[in-house]
Length: 213
Image (cartoon, rainbow, N blue to C red; front, side, top):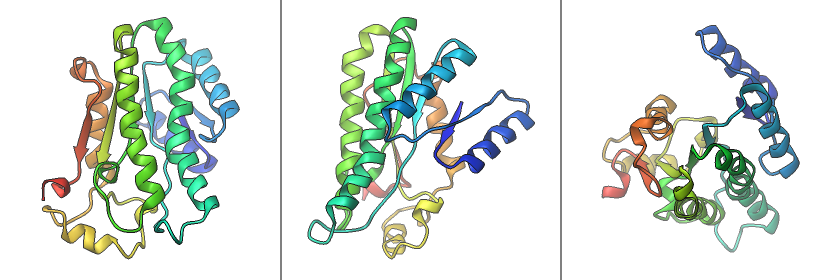
């Protein structure tokens, strides 16, 4: 089930998956809305009768320090990057509890672990995602539900385009470049699969060595 606030790109992804022989549907979802999440979960269960994997991947970024950030800007970042993850877990976990199985993968960031100047709200939200994932892992592990976070470095997506900090981040990355989405997705696939059945409560760091410096 592909879910996004942007309808046309979401439908295009589902169509591409079907074109490659897979099964996919699109369902519009505002991750900041409990009602939207509830409708998405109901539609998914109605279609497939279960939910084996949840990937919380919606995100936005703002580059503002604590003094210049506005309350509105802070709230928007936290709503998408932190509240959205909470609502996804809140609505999907009951389905997984009934199954006694499931894997939840929350996309955080290496900036949820280490800081840069001027990313106040983003750091706060992504750091919370790491700890929410750990909390979910220890709470629901006895019921067969695994919860992990993925912490990428800079990835070539529309969200990362055009920021002044991009080049300094790349220069501080041992591999001296940003990742492509295709270089991050195998890590997500690993955590979604039974190959990682003994992995929970951890962060998979995929940042080109940035945090090793």
